[in-house]
Every structure is written in C-alpha cells, then in structure tokens.
Image 1 (tube, one colour):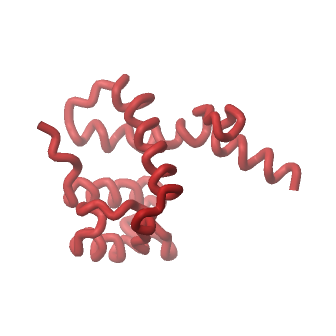
Image 2 (image 1 turned 30 degrees about the horizontal axis):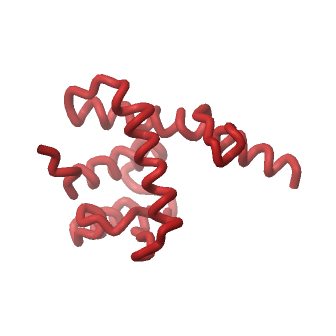
Length: 130
C-alpha cells in the first residue's frame, strides 16, 4: 500500500534543498516554491516551515491543465528515469540522491518539447540568439 508522501517528508526535502543550494538553513532572499495543491504542500505546518526557510509557497491554479501537466510530466520522468532504476532502501538515500537527479534532469536529460535538449541547453541556446 502506498500512502504517498507526507507533510513531514515534504518539510525534510525542503530543508535539504535549501541546505544544499545555499549551504545555510535559510535562503538568502525570498524564493518562490511552486507545488500543486496536494495536502502535504498546503498543510499549515508546511507553509509555516517554508516561510521559516525563506521560501514563499505558491500553488498551481485549481483546474490548471498546463501547470498540472508540467509538474506531472516532471514527476513522471523523475520516477521513470531515476527512481525506478536506482536502489532506494530508505528515505535518507532518496534525500541524498534527489539533488543529483534533478541536476542531471536539468543539465543532461533530453526533452522532446525542447528539441531533445536539456532545459539548460535550451535556455543557453535561447539566450545566445537573443
């Protein structure tokens, strides 16, 4: 039985992300954190904790197919190309690997909607032509 991810898990991941990105327990300035409207994200404890970390919780609009499609595509790709091919015996292992998986997704993973380039390659190409 899979009960999904809990609010506590989300808060652990948020803290890990801030610590890894900024080498601190708080972002240097307010950063928007976009998520869907799932219960672990909209929980009062999660929103309070986000603000303590310097994050501003933002949520996809209800019944927003474009926003939901983008986040669902990312989650599907992350599960298919990273989670299902990596031994993940416990939450600590997941937290230790998630940052590298997201970096790989942004730096190296080809996306059909970006003409088989990674997001960073696509952005670099757009910037070079601007």
